[in-house]
Image 1 (cartoon, one colour):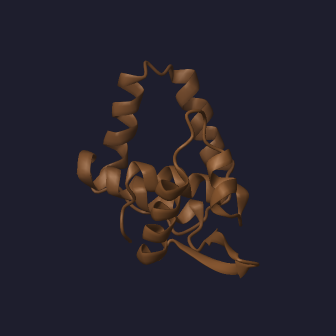
Image 2 (image 1 turned 90 degrees about the vertical axis):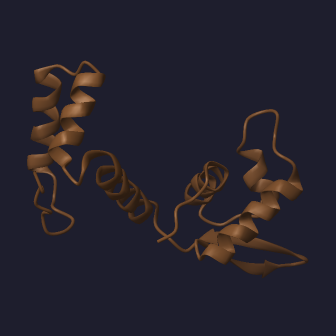
Length: 129
């Protein structure tokens, strides 16, 4: 799966939120100063070429919608982060964020409890470290 640029990801965030919309509706979701119509339209076409977005005709215009679930992209992005910066070790990643964000043990225990009670989405990936 291809990675998105920051601008592409911002547009995808809007599409994931709105589900199906035209370029004008995407622009409305951005804070001031709003990006130019042509800029957003170009980004949407790039996303189509990358296989992230498709469209359907509505009148003289198009409605765009995501082809990829946000959770699938998030999962892939996290895996790339772990592989690229933590040598594939989720343990190293969690340790890093604990130290850098000054996380308390009670916060970590709370996260662990949430993980234990959550439904597993897929088979567990074992830590390489």
